[in-house]
Length: 169
Image 1 (cartoon, one colour):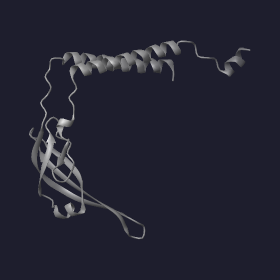
Image 2 (tube, rainbow, N blue to C red):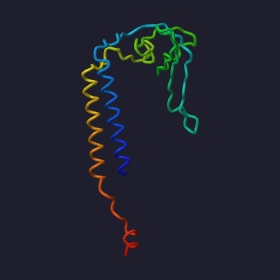
Image 3 (cartoon, rainbow, N blue to C red):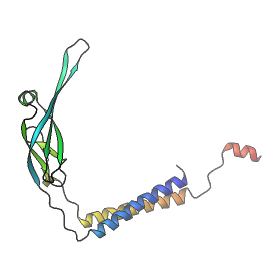
Image 4 (cartoon, rainbow, N blue to C red):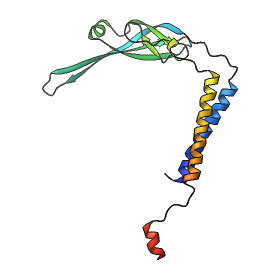
């Protein structure tokens, strides 16, 4: 990798770190956004069966998927899908209502209750301003080290190729 490429990468990484540092300082006193698990009623939009068949026609594997949609607290419609069992697929019909849980800050993180695995919003940690500042400063320092590396190790003139030596002789 050439000297200019290393320097550009170092400057970009440093710039990202400086931007992050400024962002962390600008939001230092900002309280964290409240987060919670919310519930809604969703509608099944489809149940799909996918079969993997052998060349002789024998079914090797079947998978079942349920698609659903729901309206979140913000008024927008969101979609989700769950892998389900054969028994669940047999009991679901298009248009049927299902209970849905979703994250208040990001409704695209959702699951149909009783059909999928839902990871509660409480398991996601909210980064603190101090943690964001520390990480941004580390990224800035890493970018600075890349710039120094590029300047030091790629600062010398590149060695001549054999063809250049032959032409000089």
